[in-house]
Length: 340
Image (cartoon, rainbow, N blue to C red; front, side):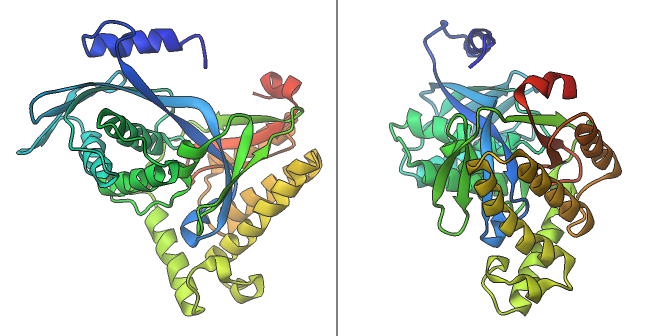
């Protein structure tokens, strides 16, 4: 937590015209994916970690059949009632969250909501997943339900699909709901098993925004997912997780997925032995695969990756779905500021 929290909580209270300290607030962190990109929707394993940027959702219960929501960062008021929804486009998340909370056993509760977020939109750090998790959790708690974290994550994933139309995987919401401080999470996206992997104290994770925002709805994300599903079908497999590298040698998209899944456990092993050169090499391999095989990088992002390495990072790669957004790098803690 940071010194900015009291100010943010005060602003949420003011937005709801409520006394300071009188509100219940839930927190949903963003995430950065260290390795394992574009494999969650292929039933693979991934290695994200929760970050110190987050979404806060505060609420008070209403007595009528209308819900409202306002963001401290985005102008406009969302109004959601039985006869429809008005206001900013992100209100689609609010509408979907009401239904999702009900599916988790919460009574249909109408709220005045206030939201604030420090997760940059379009950065590949799961701003939309954090919003979805926070909204569903707020509606559940307002209805007296404390949902299982995995069920919460899956419900929030359905919120994002309903609100954006993007067939996203489950990694982002699971990382938000299951994140552990100072640990990465090895997530099995087929079984939903999660193992917390300690991060060495002599290793720092640096995330740098490329300056290019991206939105999945306007990218080639859905096309990549469809291509992966088609490749699995051609091989007679349920998912590309079950493919061997020799089976996909001539298919760049599938080749990335299979090789990337292998990099996840290699990365975990390197973390456990605190092998900085190996970690950097795996990041570099991952970026090359995303750039050349999966084709989701951009020249500006490639230059940023190169610059981070030149300035002393062990390795760096694009993170998130690609087409812009952020780069993740690993470095010695005392060199982070100078590298940045």
